Image: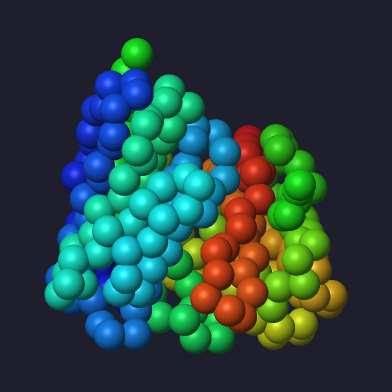
Length: 111
Length: 112
């Protein structure tokens, strides 16, 4: 699976958009981009995933660059409950493939 | 709507004890995973299973074994617990489609 690079920490004001970047310059054509988050003392929670098109769901939007070497997770109106560690992961989808978690980005939403 | 459950949230065991961590999923998923999470080391994969009675070693299988006798249940076994196995243990499951992986709430195990 391709390696990802994320900033270790970010801050965001409550009610503003949080834009979390991820670099995955070695991503291959059949690898998906996944985002998870982990609120303190809980299991990781799935947010969104995509292959090459931008995706949106009720939680967030995922913007993938045309060359697929980077992506941005957007939380449109961050709340205090969005404070968590956010993980960007790339992987192929084969039987038994597994998620490899890096250190992620600690997002702190401030009042 | 609970999807992945783990038998205990907190567990305290003594060195040398045999420890069973149970995980159950109700989504009929083929793939199930056991991770441990430690400060500064992130989530590390211990074992995973992609079918009943099938298991594969992850990145740190030493000191652990697993059992998957039924599709919905994946057990992690510490044959002889040691203090360096004090950690947060997370179970996860995933289907075959390119869908999300669901995690359980975690079990914080302390070995004294």
